[in-house]
Length: 239
Image (tube, rainbow, N blue to C red; front, top):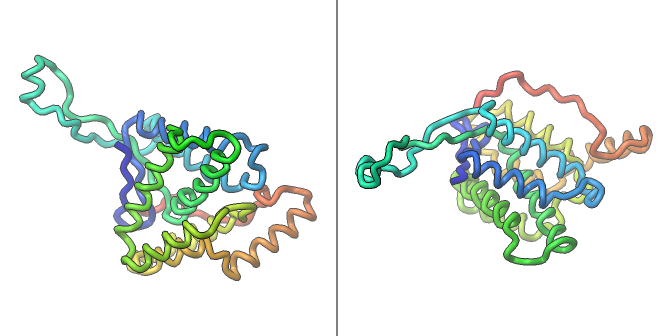
């Protein structure tokens, strides 16, 4: 079963599951985010989502964390069926910074809506269902870290702002990530809700950044999402 839990220092959340849990999510995201040319105005968001998928795929190859979880096979069951089998399954996991994960969960709403409008409007789409399960797990984990009022405000924003990431300057997520990393555990606990809302509110800092990026895009004739900003992520993140 796919699991999402906050890391010990609240730096991010740990996504874990067996190979098939993560494989299902990765494949569903690739299908729903579609072709880069079809959703060009969402390309920045698409690339960030796929970058998280890359980390998940690396996890399934054993290149991230590995843990063993009880699979429910008790000694009595094994005896009853005359089986010799391990009673634990391998779970693969990787950590994602909280601002990055929140943005991913929000941005997936846009791709689900685009997929329903242009590809498949069925409420029974299995890939959409897999992504909704992932989003629900993120929301459930986030709810545990916020107070009730903060969580309700966040949900209200998610449901009323549509689309959420159209031509979004995703470089802003790097700024939020780096700012968040510098906080203490107490500060992360106190300000996590504010970071979640800043992703959606497009405050003065975001507007200023996007304006600079647009100028750079025009002068270099590059796409907005291709403009790089100076980032200095620590070599080792304390989770």
